[in-house]
Length: 128
Image (cartoon, rainbow, N blue to C red):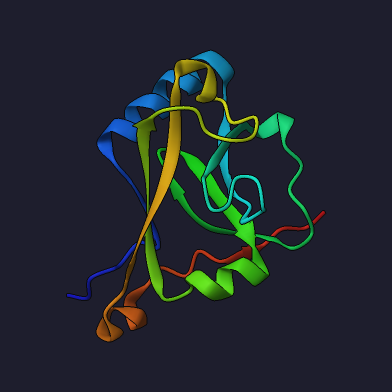
């Protein structure tokens, strides 16, 4: 049986925070901008309150939340498995966990070469 490798994972503690935020805000998504201010810190937004750009692609789904980043940035992460986690402290931007005194973090690990053939094909272009 072939093993499917997910491109994006989420820790149990981050999943608990997402559940809390979803109860308060409704449907959510993560955006990993790679910008100068928040770097690769995953930002969590209400789906109705965030406009995805024409260069953003969906790279996976965790805890019922789509995870998006730009096509260019994906080129740097295409051989990595990403894990969204949570840590104490104030993060950048307008991410929904900030008022809780928390910040989502991103951990990456390089996939072994044999895993690349089994990665879920979750990369999708977003139509605007």
